[in-house]
Every structure is written in structure tokens, then in C-alpha cells.
Length: 359
Image (tube, rainbow, N blue to C red; front, side, top):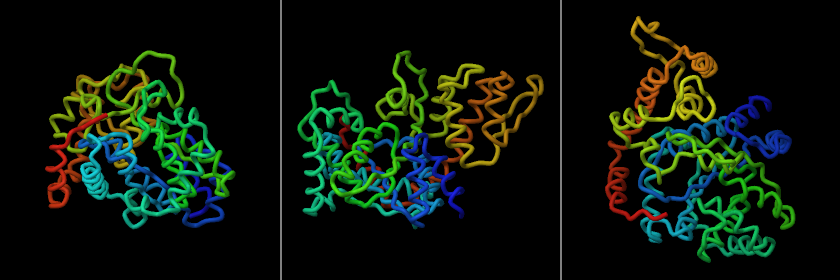
């Protein structure tokens, strides 16, 4: 695959790339650059942004030649007081998440799962954490609280101050050329680009992927950019506006039927987002079943066609919702079946149901 094709694949993932020139240099000089993604095992329900969308993005990057290091951030979740601060419970959730991604057909040949609980045993890791901390102000680190789902105004525990220093060190300890994370992780990635050269490391290329919207009506405020994206993103803490990997067909239909989807409006429309970022990434066409009196069935072979019809009000929101619910369920059904057949996944699923969820 030529350089331009590889770059285009990465650009399909990155809503923002810092910088495209740096990305081109990495791909020109390395056939298999190391890309890093990390996840905090923080809940027993895994939504489609964490499951389906993450697998789509990682597989695209792998197709572009990237070798992924997926960091299971169990110590980070511990520092962030997730799962009641019980490390053993956090680790079981992490193991279950890995089973979910395998069931989503993640490109396992190009993905290595690495546990923070293993790398914290290495003295050199803590040396990097200390170097990051020594070259950052407390004020700057607190601004990075966003990466933990926290606000700067919150009263943070001392462990949560440590978290951004660790996440920044992770990038260099894993020798990552590229960070592939959501827009909500932008601040710590920019910190890594700033402090890296000062410490004798490098400036990692930052690929910030789009964060899938929740199903609710977008709130009215003056937030923009990454802050607005964080406000809108699908969240486990709002279960009725999130579609989970284990949701039944009936539950998926119920949630989508009540979702925000104003006729003719494409901006901040979650139903259209699911078409663009998930459905058309997995299927060739979307079929809309309609009675003849309303114009008969429709079929769209790409997102642009669908968006144009919706904008012109040639496609009603309820007709679209029915098709989207069916498509999402069809994509989740094979994942559910694989998880049901896996004794490991089933055992972990039963265990983690009992765990206390803490913010």
C-alpha cells in the first residue's frame, strides 16, 4: 500500500491529526509504526463506541501498517477510584473488555494487550513518570483532569493528580509513534508532545478519533471543540442514551425510537452519526422499508446519499430509526453469539455484574 493510501486510512480515523506532516514522516520512515490506545476498565456495561467503533478504528490503523499496543489501564482506573477502588475487580472488567474486542473481530494479529499492573513493576517506568511530573506544573496537570472524566473544578484525590503523569509516561514507555485516542484525551497527548523532546524522547503523532454521540438531545451551551464533543459523547452514566453491546434487540429498538433525530437536521444528530461512523463502515447498503403510499422502499449505498435524502426531508426520522435499529442489532448479534459461546467471557460477565460501579 502506498503512503497516500496509508495516510488516508489514518485520516478516516482521526477527526484531528497533530500533525499530518509528522504522520507522513512516520509512515515514510516506518512500515510498522507503533500506535498506542489505552482504556480504563471502569464499568460493567460496554457501549458500542467502546466496542464496535473502537474495533473499526483499530482495524483501519492496522491496515495502514500500525502495530497496536492496547494498554489495559488498571492502575489508572484504581487511581481514579473506579469499581470502588478495588484493583481485582478493575482487572476482571479489563479481561472482559478484551473478550468483547476479540468478539468484534479486532485485528488480533496486530494488537498486543499490555497491562499497567505489569509495567509498574519496572523501575524505568516510574522514572519516566517522575520526569513528566518534574517538567509539569500542578496547574497544567489539573487541566488534564478531563482525560479522567473529571472537571478542573472538582476536588481531586492525590492519586488523580498522578494519573495524567502516568498516562503521559505510558506513551514513551510503550515507544509509541502514534497515540490513537478520543478527543477527550487531547490535553495529555499535547502534554506528551511538549515535554517529550525536553526529556530526550520524541513528539508522538496525535490521532484524535471522533467520539460517538449519545442518543439524547444535545444540551444548549457555548462549549466548542473537544469540550463540546465530551459533552455530547455516549456515556455509561446515561444508560438510556447509550447502546450497549449486550442490549437485546427490543432494548436497542426502544432506545433508538426515542432518540433525538429532528427531521431534516444533520448537525449533532446521533442517528445519522451511527450511520456514518458504524453502519456504513460494516455494510454496503442501508435499506429503508416503507409502505408504497409513502414512496416505497429506499436503498442507500453510502452515507452521503443518505444524508442528502434526509436533508431534503425525503427520508423521515422514524423510517430511518427503524432501519438503524435493525442494522445495529444485526451487527451486534454475531458479537453476542461469540460471547455466549465463550466460557471465559460468560464467567467474567457473571462476576462483574455484581461489582459496585463508582464514578
